[in-house]
Image (cartoon, rainbow, N blue to C red; front, side, top):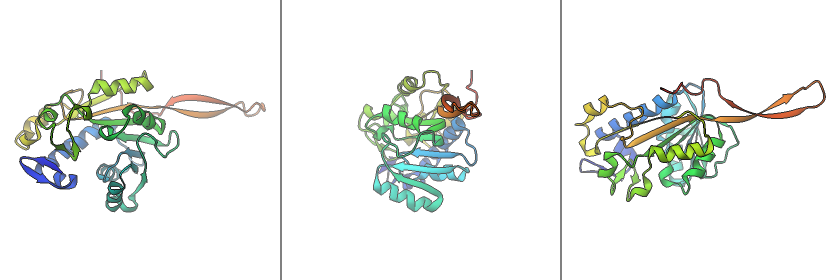
Length: 255
């Protein structure tokens, strides 16, 4: 159940259909597409796909989508929403049922419900050959401070333990990929009851590199492992492991 402007909603989908929910959802998706630069026919995995709302969005943008979700009920709702348009798997973010380097894009928006954000991020990097996008609810946003004991987009916020910051996620990334360029931003700066009255102000706020929005997105390229055959005519047949960034996977980081 989510609450906004005193109204009660019984599901995230019902909330997203409200005027406030529609606006917030549009801003959130704009941030994601700004940071990911999605292309048609890319293989995309959404970790913690819930009821498949974002998967359907990515599918409409032309991606070949896969989702993994630990809740059987949510996975059933995702299957009802997407039908045969997505490959949906039951699994946990800390132990993804996929091989290394399998996806061009991996999106993660389930830190608030994982046992270990660090392991979740490492798993997302392991199965990715292109770029990873992480979305968190920002502990330093005004909206989160005002809504801490309510629900935001279906996520219970009872205390600060479910809220994260850019610096926290940045450290997790640096622990695995020390030199990866990082792009980040946030949206929804004001308490949710202020919308749509605050929409005009929100539209003028920058998305990139702003630390105060409720929904914070962070993206970075992954350097994947591949095997190359050396000297095939000499009989040596040595395999050499190399690290390589997918060409064109991430736009140049803004200076």
